[in-house]
Image (cartoon, rainbow, N blue to C red; front, top):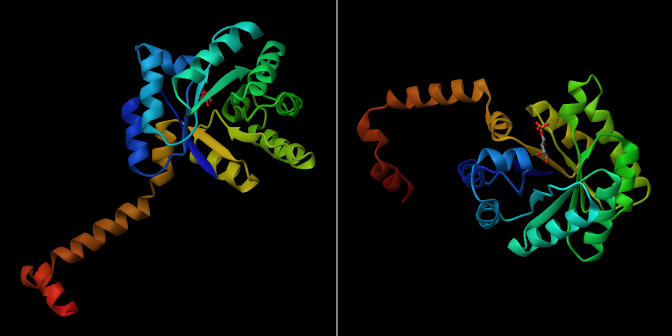
Length: 227
Ligand code: E4P
């Protein structure tokens, strides 16, 4: 499964790239607004740091406006994927942009019927928001299971990009179901690494190592032994 970072923050993106952890980035208007920067240069800088798709969301409600914005975003960098909302107008824009060879990520997906329509419109990615469904007492992961079945039944090439991920369990469940991608905030990516037993184990190993006399620990001794 691919992992994307859901962030427009360059420091977070650089750090996650240095771990070899991320295959792409998703942004949305709220995340971009937090950075207080001109969005085009910011978008270009994000694309230059990540070797994979970078989603940027349109900010109009009508299909024509979305298509216009999408074409503009696509000129910024080849990594760009245009995000369109799961509305009638969003589907029209998805169909249009996809027919022009521009990749679209249909966002704000909350039901299997919406997911089916996004795939039919030609979306490269569809983003089901699991956390926001959980927030209203609906099972977000049930949507991922339904999408997986529907897309497999009809061999849609559309990738399931699990979004609104709130904790590591969402990521693990998505991976078990076989979702193509999960996008997550930096805090969740960090949480995927952590385990208290890893920290305790490392402390113990290093403490024991400290007990060895300095002469034995020297790298020269190791080299001589190996020669
Ligand atoms: C995905 O593309 C969205 O930007 C994101 O996952 C939304 O997450 P939230 O529900 O935590 O805001």
